[in-house]
Length: 148
View (spheres, rainbow, N blue to C red):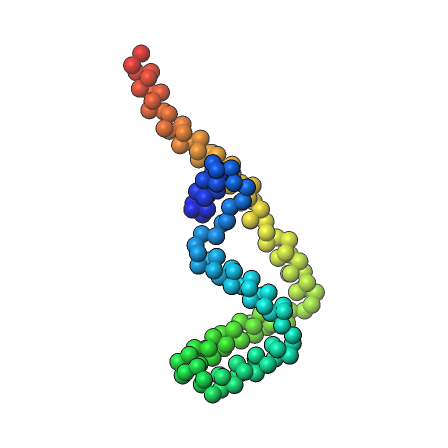
C-alpha cells in the first residue's frame, strides 16, 4: 500500500493524470495474460473449444507431457473440481428464497467496509500528517521559547 501511495505522490509532482497501481511486473504480466486469454476465447467457436478439450484429454490419458506433468495437471483439475462442487453445493443447499436474500444482502452489505475505508482513509492520513508535523515543530517551538 505504501508503494502505491509513493507512486501516486510522485505522479502528482509530475502532474500525471493516471498511474498504474500494479506493484510488480508479475502482476502486470498476469493481468495481461488473463486479458489476452479472454480475447482469444472470445474469438473461438464452440467447435474449436471442444476440439482443444478433446486433444487435452487425449494428451492427459496418453501421458504425452510426461508422468510428473500429467500428475500435476490431474491434481490441479481435482482441486478445481472440488472448488466447483463446493460452490454448487453451497448454492443448492438452501431454499431459493433464502439464497436470493443472502445474495442480495451480500451484494448490499459486502462493499460497505471498502466504501468506509475510501472515505475514512484520507482523514486518517491528514490526522497522522498533522500529528507528525506538530511533533516535528514542537521541539523547535520549545527551543525558541527557551532562548528568549
